[in-house]
Length: 230
Ligand SMILES: *Cc1c(COP(=O)(O)O)cnc(C)c1O
Image (cartoon, rainbow, N blue to C red; front, side, top):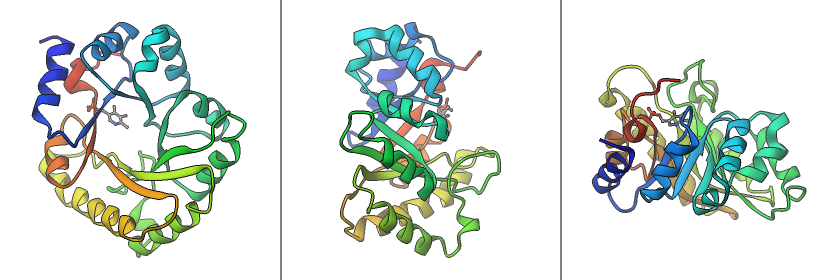
């Protein structure tokens, strides 16, 4: 199957309220062109530099989609990131949020949609807030969201998680449930400048389970493009 067929198969399968973010890492501009031609609306990149190069090679085509930062955001890349990405999915501390907020004006923007990244499996190899380091976690997240809502240039629009990499998709279910619970809790707070619309969880191996547990945004690379060679 080609990229168009795979993209359309997945969008045909997921419910209409679920946004598919195409994960572009290691893919060529030609592959991204193909997926945009197939109807992709949202593209995720892991690195600022790669995203910049990709957007440059795509030229005007790049304007047809929303660009999501889904990799770890380094402080020294914040200025560039704010010029490249529509959405920053990987805010993983109040310090990062403050650093972003400070630079929004300079990037010529007024407000930037952000999601908070949670490392739900407490894995050392991954970025994101680890629940086990901040118990009771629900209270910690409520405080964090309230503190972040004071930052006038950010709008908190969701939570993002990778989910644990180990095991079968079914093994992620309890982690996904926990995140959905936190998501609902934060949504119910009604904090100004917080509009919890997106729960970004689920990748190729886990998106079906993630959607069953309340995800409304999945990030898929392999399922659309095939196995990574690079
Ligand atoms: C690579 C990646 C994905 C997609 O992974 P696949 O298994 O290829 O679908 C999703 N989210 C992030 C943050 C990634 O780095």
